[in-house]
Length: 431
Ligand SMILES: [Zn+2]
Image (cartoon, rainbow, N blue to C red; front, side):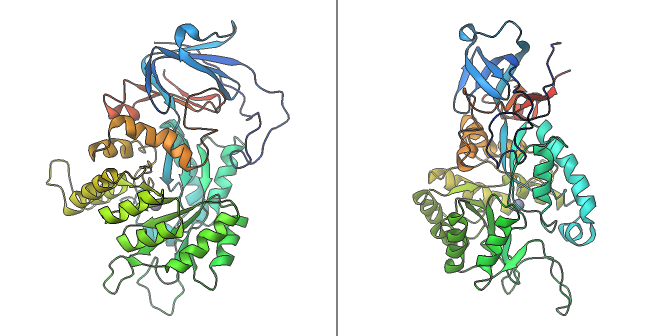
């Protein structure tokens, strides 16, 4: 099947908030060219609609509805996508563009042995593959030793220097002194860490410093593997977490917490973080608390799944205990009514395979329609960007993805991408 499409100018035009496109308008005349996209069906971020079309003008969605109701200008470019489902560009809520899979290079070696330029060069490939996989926005949750490279990558993408998703960044992330890694060296040696250390006496300065260097969110590790026997224990006190949230919130920035223990999750929730990442050992009680405080869970199922595969677990083998426990905790979160965010921790596994998280969310018990909402409209709302992205409705940015088939009937369709448009520009089209 052939159809034509136009490659719009790389310049992003129109009035976008500064956190989306740091460089803003380029002074060129606004792009008012139109594209009419006619797939078999449209998932608008909430519901599936058979027989809809979508009209794009410039970088925005101009109209969406039953095909016979959409009036396209005579000179509009027409894109037919028979059999395909058009959806909002997917949103990855937990990426690490500066990491690559641990079965290629261990995390310690990436942090300690890979030059910054090498890591950034690799990250440009990761950004391109992420976009081609239909993820038009990522919240990148920490450079893991690569400094403030996420701030530069974000600007390079916003300026059209390299292809990639819109980025929401946290820079280095914050860990309690002595709790993180790499570790296991002679104590006389100061080993560079994968995140920025801080404590009650320095937290205020570190939060403000990361904001000053470009953080859109503040990420904190509420627990980590620093118990007497290497077990996971809470790191920051409730008071320290509250201090982080108060300063971030003063600046208008939300806080995200890495946490997998019930106590870490409890403290993060009470302190006022907006999303909790992982939550592996979450209990019905702590999920009820999260629900009560309107804190979302990003279960990052795909990362745990990948790590067990790296340790030798193969398709057809009995499920390891950790998988059974993860299934139970995800189930408990769903049953408690916790808002499910979709974020995979990609970087632990291959960039561009982000759709694995959606497949696994369905495998772990979330309905396909709810999983699609999580990766689009819910994630957009959690990012406070629902007026920009995450839905197909007039006025929003034209971030659009087509998948072959119907992902509500078969979620694996989200990994069979035939078309990607970001901000009105076609970045991938079927041959
Ligand atoms: Zn992560």
